[in-house]
Image 1 (spheres, rainbow, N blue to C red):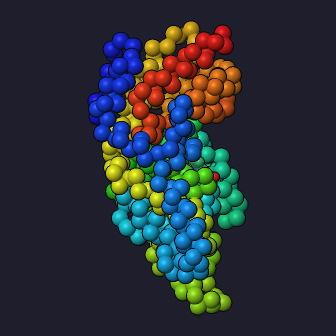
Image 2: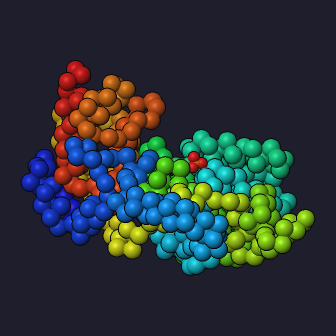
Image 3: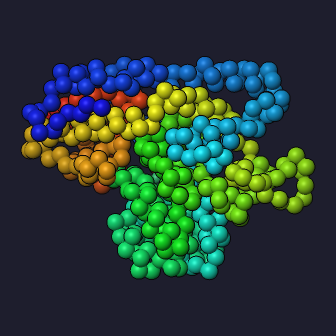
Length: 407
Ligand SMILES: *Cc1c(COP(=O)(O)O)cnc(C)c1O
């Protein structure tokens, strides 16, 4: 991937177009529905609609539901949570049989965190990244109350020192690979190793990493992970989450959500719960089939988009964004809290402006869709499957114009 050299003069539209012309992933944009006049920088909150999904869902409704009726459960619906898990596995860098799809991130997190604490008995503390998504924190707090263990929130930068000093009573540590506000990327390998050195298990939230960054779950010996499919994976609003449980833990975990789909022989309808072997144990109950089938179709795009190429382009888009941002007049008061170092940033950039509340409507009027997080952040997400360098150039130019009009 050729990137814009930020030491050069201010980037031009011609520079952006030249980068687009060299971009091997550029043809994939055709596989998404993007309205005319819209520059979409919010694929990190709701991924754009893949073109193939509408026809697939019509066929699922008319054929699988309307015509095949109950027979569809044995013709593919029952197996869907595992089958779709196998499509996500290569994106996460893991071998088969370790990913299952269903429910929401918060539910999966509750389930796996409880199982993790039970798997590491005699330890009385859960550690969470202090900047983790609030729902994660709420769930961890509930797990702590239920199991009678303590919960401590520690900034990610201090996690290694905390683990080294007082890690011997930590059962599970919960961390986000990419900070949902700042876009800062943490080292999954290093943090996992620190947890294991202290005898703790690790649970990763990959919501802002999956589909944007190679995470190498097997290579880094991660214990548990959860993540969204409606962000970079474009599974659609409310698309089911995924859960990863390392093969070595699967037959030992005692999950709190013991629904019938996680039973060893669900169709015995037996009175007593006997957990399934393997990743099936992490199934709960009847999944949202329409969402699951939409997600399955969306994941087809990743067959032509190896995650390393996606990452390289997303970094290049970010680098170009920084170059465009640097060319804005300093008097506009635009700042940025995302690290520039490629090792330390994910796939969105968080810009600051003291009047972000007023900037947002102006951007929307110009067709620029990003999002806002308190107190003063504007997040620009770069989904390499459909964002172009020209989008970035025009998006930052619009940002400058919008702010200039305010003052
Ligand atoms: C989007 C997001 C979630 C969403 O959780 P749901 O339970 O699916 O609503 C959780 N964690 C992080 C870090 C997120 O970015």
